[in-house]
Length: 196
Image (tube, rainbow, N blue to C red; front, side, top):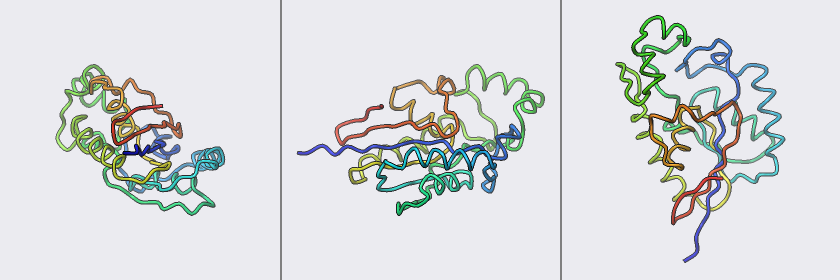
């Protein structure tokens, strides 16, 4: 039996207005900045040689805009997927990190020391994000035809996928650096998963 290999390029969206303001944001309409759009166009040119067979992105505007700029001039199907959405921040939505620390020092300390133990009403836990993202990604790798896929999403979604690949504990996922527009290439086969 032949082994079909799936290449998936995971890309965090370009800089958005919320990133410049330094706030956690579940605003699905948060747009890219001028700098973010410029950088996405530049990365699109760099990736132009990659013959993506499909692209998938978060429903958030910052991801949809990024994906369209990366694929400009190409006829690549682009689908929107709810599983790729931003982590739900609950009471932290719209707040800066300093706001969060000032309003609830205990919760902020847990987030920075044992992030997998933090529970706040209306906020996704790391386990919640893992449950939403990882089974979906495994299914994607096993169900798609061979060829490169582009996935444009958010920092915590990418961290969860990478942590799954390297079997990292949820308590450590925040140590994975995921800058805007960095490309993380993963490789999957019907017989297992790996990471480049």
